[in-house]
Image 1 (cartoon, one colour):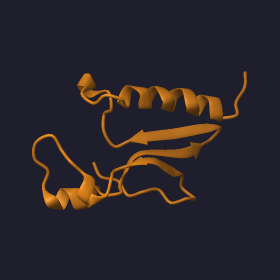
Image 2 (cartoon, rainbow, N blue to C red; image 1 turned 90 degrees about the vertical axis):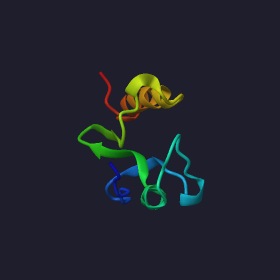
Image 3 (cartoon, rainbow, N blue to C red; image 1 turned 120 degrees about the vertical axis):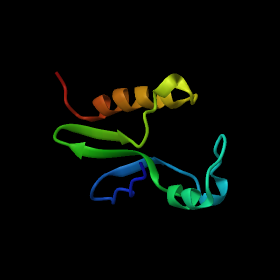
Image 4 (cartoon, helix red, strand yellow; image 1 turned 180 degrees about the horizontal axis):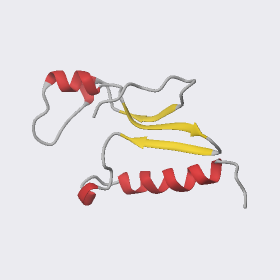
Length: 88
């Protein structure tokens, strides 16, 4: 899926795709798909109630095929709960 970036009043886009000329794919990626992905968000964060809603545009744990994305998921879980301001 390709999502439009969130505006400042909607939330943040902490991680997004590179410019069209820097996007590479293992295999084949068509030029028009590179143009569609350029600068689009990979991760989005929005305040929701007393916490955060965090969205990714792909299943980042799928077959553990991309190094570093497990850490991204763990940081999303730990950082969002630490920054929510809720204390027990």
